[in-house]
Length: 243
Image (cartoon, rainbow, N blue to C red; front, side, top):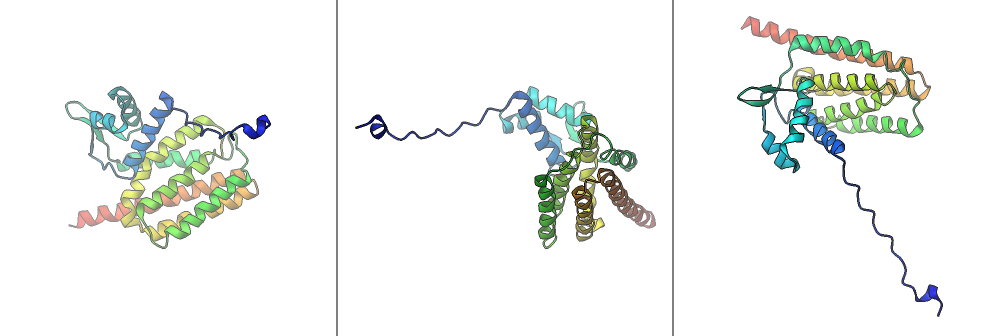
């Protein structure tokens, strides 16, 4: 017999997943907690326990403190002496300032190191539109915000300017939970419809490589979203004053 016929067939071993680095673990926990805050799993006023979070993620309290410190620097939580870390609420005046800055930054997406989209990139946006069409049949607030988040990441990927991406992301997550909180007043189907229109317009511009138009489209829809929210805030204030 030859060596080949005697030898047992070799089976490739399944590659073991690479252990996460300390930095990757930090980012993972940070994003999980940020999502929970924005999805109102941690409502404003909730207390975040370092000990409980350390147990959940099976880490020491030191990296948990670092994550909470980053969330505090972004205005999502606040450290209160003698109480601990509390999830913050959003002040209307602060909200207005954040939206005004987001309006100006939106225009820069198509100007600062724009990154051409591949066919695969465009297909992901088309998939989000399809997902929107499915979600609107049985509208759900969390599904809307998840969809909105996924589209936001597609938008930020269109610029190679890292500081712009970081600032845009920070501001986006400061206001994302406000949209979810106000959804009953805004009207879920109406928000899905407006959002689908934005995705379609961005896709059409990306298909022809018109990056500056994407910035203007984004700015227009941020502005309209803000106006819708402020209209309902004004109506609520007037209603409370009349009581």
